[in-house]
Image (cartoon, rainbow over all chains, first blue to last red; front, side, top):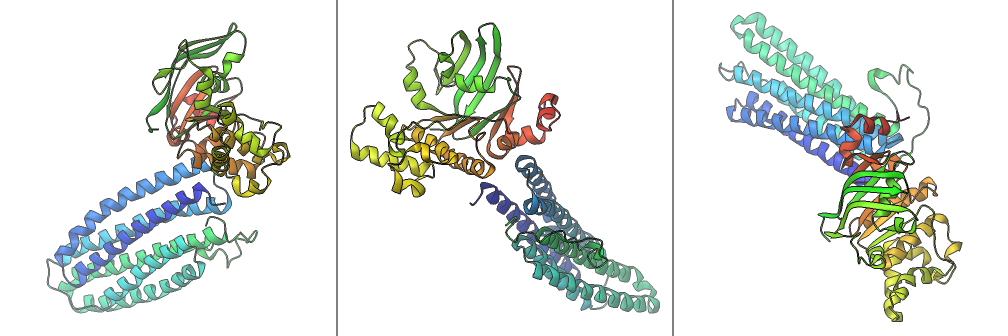
Length: 235
Length: 253
């Protein structure tokens, strides 16, 4: 029997999708402002941040009401709890885009340091992780969620690589230090975006399988899988 | 019917002899929504429900003061046709109470009482009503079976179908699921959510979670008073009265 409750869960999913699409555009604009030195890409990021903040509040209220009115259990409960946490992750990763444009505002006032392919590459990976982690969450696709977890390593590697390049740059050219620091921070923000997407993927695995994989708890055998949850729960 | 206020209860007092059962109760029932009345046993919620189609008239020693307007008309005004009122405002009871007749005759009963004899039109209404209560597919091939042979949840939905046949505006439900198991309860709840697209529903329930799941508006009653009435989502997340808070979070008593 299709429940009216399922329609409400569906609605919650579509709100999260909207929020994540918005965050993705913010990341794209933020990186564009840095890489293409495009000042016009800055203000839309701030405007979308307002919207994302508003959505965060609405989604939380929505989840609170669903819990209060429906007393969800099992898969439904894990899903709503996962939605609350995913909501917070999306809001924070949107904040990282704002952090990036704040650095861009600095950088645009000074001549370019030199072209870095690593920043756009990191941005592409981070955006893809956000999109796919959310897709995995709403479609209960744990294979995709696990695949997103693997991509985080590549992002960490790139961050280490750009840190080396920028350190080198700073040692040789002291007037470049402020700009290099800004770029270093930008790479850090992109890496954080990947971390938020990683968290969403871990939440997805918890929602679908009831298995807590955070901090490698599963590998450390901190969490035992107590039962085989129904694949239909919370669909 | 609009989604405006269909029933407006104002300053309603009700006495069973010396016992003051309802104390200046207000309530506003919105069309095509579900309104739930909750509260501990003896708080007056069933009494309030039964005033809405004057079922309490049948109890000796009942005195009612105050106003109940149905679409703007006072249902306690002298000269009110109580039978016509109960056709507009039907009731489903705690225990399914089909007549000891066939399934078909149960649904056709109200029509025949109303003097409709055209076989064809009765047949159409029976089919339509059973469909409305989600029974047609299961029962269409055994319409002549006794209604009493049905499982309880189907009996309860048959009682709903019997109401639908006379096209009420408002359906009152007095703990319609308390005799049913959780699966049957879920079916009745889903049916109510479907019915509210066309009808106005007022339900009394002991099951707070049921009120939360299905209703749009809730009223919390205690000792004959309407303590708090409002949008269900607000009542269950941010109640304004401490007594409501205590009751819905299970701290009552």
